[in-house]
Amino acid sequence: MRSSTFRDVPGTRRYDELRTSIHNGDVLLYRGRTFFSRVIQWATRSRYSHAGLATWWNDRLMVMEAVGKGVIVTALSKNIRSYHGDVELFAFTGELSQADRMSMIRFAQQELGKAYGRWNAIKLGLRLLFKRGIEARDALRREQRLFCSHYVAETYNAVGKDLKKGASDRFMSPGDLAMTPLLHRVAILKTARGR
Image (tube, rainbow, N blue to C red):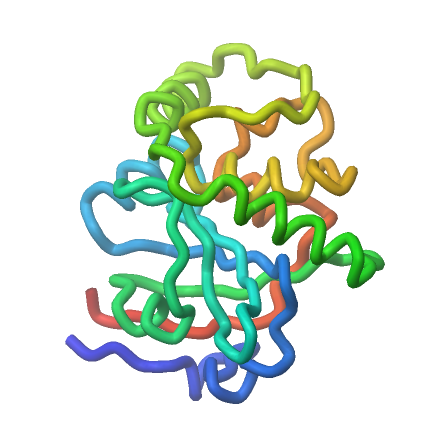
């Protein structure tokens, strides 16, 4: 079992080749290989199981994400190296000003330290699985518990970019982030072939 970068797969680039072209607010989508990741993929009918936001802190490229420990920030290079699965980079399709990008990052930083919304993620999975109604109200509201794609969606919503019309950010899955016309895949940064 070997992990590698996608040198031989079309549309793939090494992280160190792309690092300087990654912007504040770019989205990272993950395709995990663990049991829990596969349950998320199955329940949401998506190839993706996790999401995070890229951000520059001085000269360090970091990722802010909601995980089991809560909303945290880590070095993106370490995050990519240690993740058990594929990591893909998505960028905003339209224009996003530097001022909006900085507003997004400030908003996302204010959410750091909040608890992980495990129950909210489970409720989303159950609603999708059993095709129950998704709340349409999408007013920005600060929650005390967040899960990964909810965190990414509310950060974009903070600058008026609604990634899924007609659905609350609380009902955004990683697959929804991949499907929104407001984001497009830039590159595949890592794969864990053979797992």
